[in-house]
Each structure stands twice: as structure tokens, then as C-alpha cells.
Amino acid sequence: MTGGCTTGAVHPPRAKGVGEIVPEESRKSFHHALDDVKGEIVQLAALVTESIPRATKALLDMDLQAAQRVVDHDDVLDQKSVEIEARCHRLLALQQPMASDLRALITAVKLNWELQRSGDLSVNICKTVRRIYGSTIDPRLRGLIEQMGEQAHLLTRRAVDAYATNDATLAAALDDMDDALDSLQAEYIQAIMRANESATVPLNTAVQLALVGRYYERIGDHAVNIGERTQYMITGWLPEHKGAARALAKAQHLDVEEL
Image 1 (cartoon, rainbow, N blue to C red):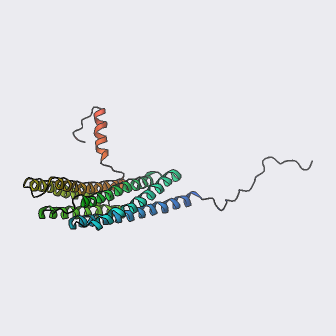
Image 2: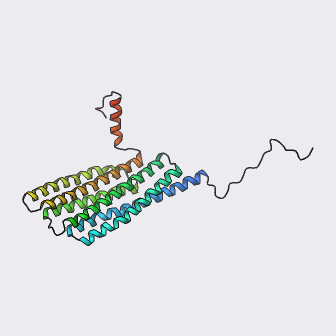
Image 3: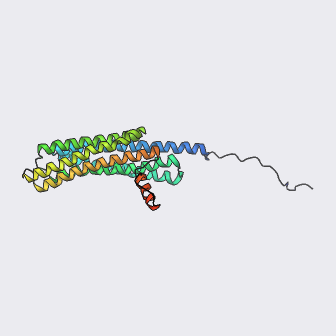
């Protein structure tokens, strides 16, 4: 009988469509996208790093126009930050990376936030120019502001270099560099207090200048955070791991002195 169906027939494999991506190609596409994100982070970091000496100079020169330029340019930084965050979220949702790829993407998200906050702190320094405009900054305070600005700038630049070059050693060294900035800030606060006591700096100006020291100190903290996240990206290590180990040891009634 003709026309019957033949059971168990072997059909030739269906050819892949032009739009289909094999796993290897998908991985390559993801890594290219990850490289692009890293490049965008480095570009954002360069703009943020540049804003620190510009803010310092605007403050020391009491230059309202220069200060306003830094404030206005922060909108550009914010826009870049929003675009980077959206791109990272898309990659997380679509690619679902694992292991080192996931660490790289998480690091990009964290660094994006740290850099955005550092940019905001430069803006805060520039807003101080408006608040104390017309005041004369004591020479001793001027010198310390200049030193803090240079150290904050150096810390941020080194942190970005560590991330851009995958240098875990440089990233780990940032903590010690930050100690120098913390010491400068402590010396600066003492100098403000002495200047206020001797009536060479009005109270309102002293308060605003004290906040400037805090802004520089926080910029340094963000640089250290960038370094720690860079170490995490490269090695999987985070400083929180030590504290977590202590908490686990306490929960298990272990001796925590060695942790």
C-alpha cells in the first residue's frame, strides 16, 4: 500500500537561522559589552578626577564662575552615570553572568556609584565658594586645602589606574595613602579651631571651611572603596569577609582572637 507514513524516519538537522547566536559567540558578545562598560567607567572616572583640582582652584581663588562651571558640568557626569547603570542592569538581566564576569559587572555598578558621589563632593566644595564669597582664607588654611586637594586627586587617580589596569597591589595600597589625607584633615580642623578662637576666621566661615575638609576626606574614602572593589573584581576578596568570619565564629562559639 502506497502513501503510508514511515515510522522512525530520520530527518536532517534544521539549519541554524542567521539570527541565532551560538554560546561561544554569545560569550564574546558579552565580554565585548563588559569591556565597553569598563571603558565608560574609566571615562567617567577621568572627568570626576579632573573636577577635584578644578574645585580646589575655584575655592582658593574665590572664583564664582569657575565654581559654577564645575557645578554645571556635574549634570553631564550624572547623565553618564545613569547610562552606565542602565547598561549594567541590562547585562545582568540578559546575560546572567557568573564567577569573574559577575564580579566585574558588580564592580562596575559599585564604582559608578562611588564616582558619582565623588563628583557630588567636588560640587559641594564649589558651592562653598558661594557661601563664603568675599572672605579671606587664612594662609595656613589655604596651604592645607591645597594639600588635601592634591592628596584627594592623587588617591582618586591611583584608584582609577588600579581598576583600569587590574592592579590589585596598587588597589591595596590606597588605604595607606588615605591615612595621609585623614591626617591632613585632622590638622586642618585644628587649624580652623585655632583661627576661630583668635577671631581671624568668623564662625560661619569656619563651619563652611570645616565642611570642605570633610568633603576631601570623603573623596579619599570613595577612592579607597574603589580600590577595595577592584580587589574584589580581581581576587574575589572584600574587607567585609573578615568581619563576616568573626560573626560566624562567634555564632559557632569559636575563638575569634585569630581572625
